[in-house]
Image (tube, rainbow, N blue to C red; front, side, top):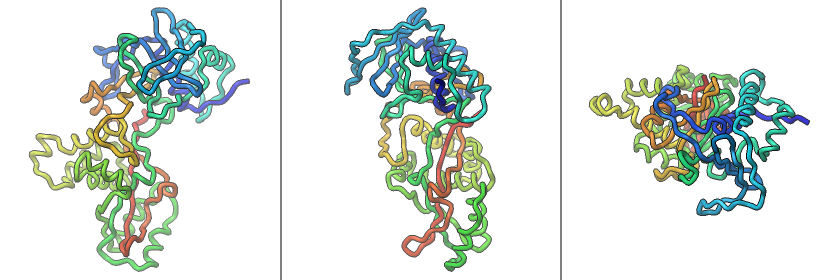
Length: 374
């Protein structure tokens, strides 16, 4: 009997099958296009399942699949299960079926055909999204199977994509309300504005109309505050202004918002630092790279990259592009040109209202950043 899968699960699965079928991957350009001059051969992909670790060795005509366990030191211990050998062309055919589902079937959940289900069973794939604790989707050895494994995240533009920074209450920034001192009925009036896609902007504009001023104060969570300060001591204020502009005028692209901040010179720094050194762009790229390589709001970040070392991006034509920290400049430029600020749930993440703390009213904004979907 056929089962259902989400498009996000299928996007990861398609990328996995495509890499096994091709045995290589092209590096991406900053504009999310294929770099015709750079292609890395793939010798091995390691993927975690609920029961054990699978290693997929890519040979000339077939993929050899071994099951086993991974030691704490990273060593792989094969189990007594009989290895499987599957023709690479079978993975190519399965990838085409998944691609057809993603491209042509509407909705977020798709019914999997019995044929595809049978193939998944044959290659011992039971978890459509890999189960890992280090946030990697799977790991890859390039050039030869004895090479170090590199952890990757997968993003697929044919499906909803996990954000780089997933909002949440720990990603809230606090603006202090000053100017006119609001009475409680006025605060209630501001907070009572009806729910809508622009409710946060409407509340901020109402505060200004009533004579209030919203000025950056702090990061709500102390760990996230420290993480942002690792980028720059003034970076939280820069980020808060970008989020504010996003709500007020609808600009969402990171590159465009950075240009706005640059024109405003929100940190009041020297022109030489802005124009010759590209200060604002540089700081934003540092932040995006840190997010892509493991920074999280509620986890202490010390500048050391996590197990995630790169990203596979599958475009709307089914082409898989590789971005890796060894190509740091290209990776950073790609993130800068292909990310946007997004709005998270106001109720869930508790922002967009005037709230009183120690006799002072604050208005929180939430930071959520994801890849642009084309």
